[in-house]
Image 1 (spheres, rainbow, N blue to C red):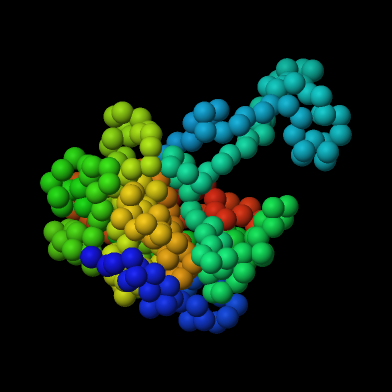
Image 2: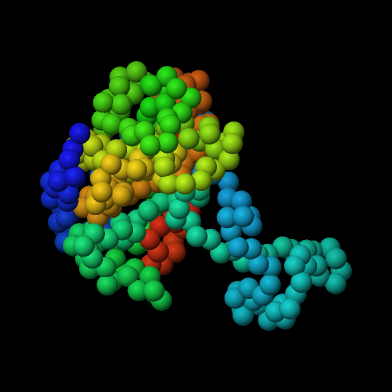
Length: 312
């Protein structure tokens, strides 16, 4: 088990600062080369696609407004149209809405870009946190760095299945030995440029009982970070918000988020729903697949809600 000093040392030993140049904002997405994308396409052997994202509840997880939308400035004459609305002849109708969403947290499936977390006032590749402005967002390593999408081979590691439990209990960490045992049992090996999705079974809990409250959760333990660095993983996801909570480290509540985003430039896919993906993988006996993650191009934002698609 790494000590707290070991984990703090990861900022140096696992750092990717300068690895792809001083102006790099992609971080570990650089591992996804053209050859990796072509190999990902060859992982499609059955043509079956499944979503790895949760449906967003409206209005519980979103603010919905059907009043005047800013886009109406480009549509003269519709400023006061009621919603839903109809033309005078009532043949043609429409609906419209304005939605507000806070996607970071423990419920909505979203991707974190490197500017999401700072350490000692610094972001990925040594940029100061002052590049993030409340009015304009981040001028560095925002989600728009991934405007071309994250298209690669995905690998599902079903640690709940490996441990022969329905789900990991809150506070249980996942360690490198778990990852390698999942590889062995599933007949798959994580390689450079892969997106690794971790199933703890929390998705099943959420389907059966709803979202749990509190900050105790299963997830990646900090000891997995050197493993992910060595394997040159491009993106990690989980059916929880990633980090096991509590982390076990007094001075770093979220080491996977902090070391991953700041030192490694490792993009994160939080709060996946991996239940259908897991049942499909077991049915087809195929634990790798083509995965497509397309962040919305929100200028200067630290992430985006997404609907990851796995195609077997």
